[in-house]
Image (tube, rainbow, N blue to C red; front, side, top):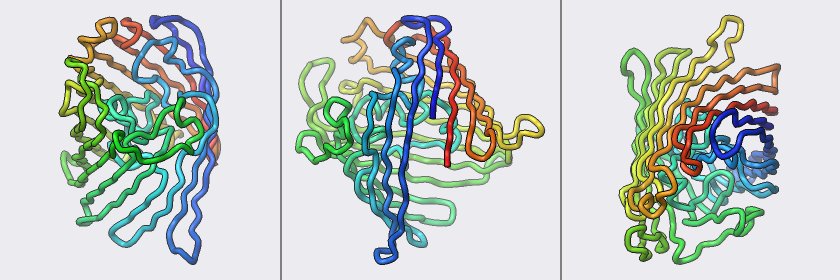
Length: 338
């Protein structure tokens, strides 16, 4: 996958940046064990375009420190109404996700910022030790639970993805989610209610400066298939411990239209909006940054042949957290999948 971006207006500096991601892996089902072994590694190159735009929510969801690393390595099994896996995992593969928000390129449409900003649990692009289980309660509902290392590290501490361990004060990350599918408003709606609790003891209280333990949050995801071609979604997340949270609230919503033009049935056109609210105590200590950051994104993904797709993208970033100004960016993603 490769991207080229131009910060057309605003931000800290106008100009262009290019970056790329190579991800390789396999799924193997050894007959003796009966389950599935999953392995994935990745290599990233190029500078983060948010360095020009001055936004906190990275405008590209493949932007990270350059280098190659192991991402996930796990073993699991699927049964008729339940599934489990364990090993090096990324929790955003299973939790907080929307079927429609995944089309968009801004990173805040992926892992919700009240999770990704507040805790260091394993999400893309650094996996961590964890276990996950899912149980189908009925034909239209399921419940899933995950337990993960509380701190998967960052580029400075885990640049190759191999420095994994369970350390006392870093705690653990417990994720819970219940999902229900219903027929509503002439379509099909999937409701997901979830939350997490992080047991770490190293959260800083922005008001007192003291260390505290435990941070929790709740979230709601609504995906609505209005028709075969139109999908709508909304997500809302909130931290329950604002004093120790960089991000207090977040919501995003939008629509995805499949086959917007005759003769192009597999193209997807998306319009999405997000808003991230930073914690009041955090902002009181960081008055040189904005209290909120919002993004309006328009994207269009077009398959070209069997393996290649192109995705032009435009984002209006309002009150960028670092630059304290608005920014307009345009980009083009090219992906090759096989």
